[in-house]
Amino acid sequence: MKYVSLVLISHSYEIVSGLKKLLSQVQPDVPIAIAGGAEGGIGTNALDIQTAIESVYSEKGVVVLFDLGSALINAEMALEMLEPHENIKIADAPLVEGAYAAVVEAGLGSSLSEVVRASESAKELVKIHR
Amino acid sequence: MIEKEVTVTIENGLHARPAAQLVQQASQYQSKLELVIGQQKINAKSILHLMSVAISEGQTIKVMVDGEDEQEAWTFIASFLQPGNESTLR
Image (tube, rainbow over all chains, first blue to last red; front, side, top):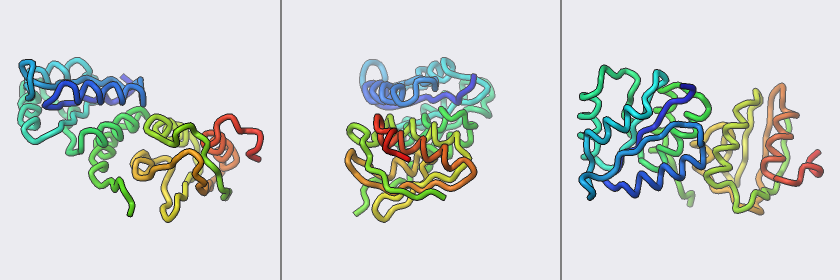
């Protein structure tokens, strides 16, 4: 695989479904999987996250982005359920901006750590200059 | 070093998709590629820099290109920012 893959996690299926649609338009070559909602409602599910990671996993690496705190618990649980995983990283980043930065960086063929850095740098982004 | 003003004619401005394309293609040049928007100077090869500015259609910005392939890089960025207007660039 040429590109680092992304996994998007949200408490809402519609959020990550819409975000994936946006990112696929920006950069159609980067593999993206989503895990959103739980049991048809709001929440996150470790098994869904695990399945999502497995579906886009490659040696090049996977960056996992999540929306709100408790999604992290299930993301970490999903990583524990997977085989040893040096090349799967959870990014400490805002979901939309971080995923956008990550998909562009990944599309340049950048390494896992570069993609993680790009997404985490989105935290520092000033959106309105007054 | 090439330094010129360009009026952006990308329809609806430099939104998410063209910004990503700009970074992708700008990264193929060796030259330093910078855009000056008002008080801000940004690196056109950095998606985070591009995300931090809003460049709208009709806005005039300064383009600064510096490096061995600056002529090629300038031609690229000028035609990128002014699609369909290549003839007036040189």
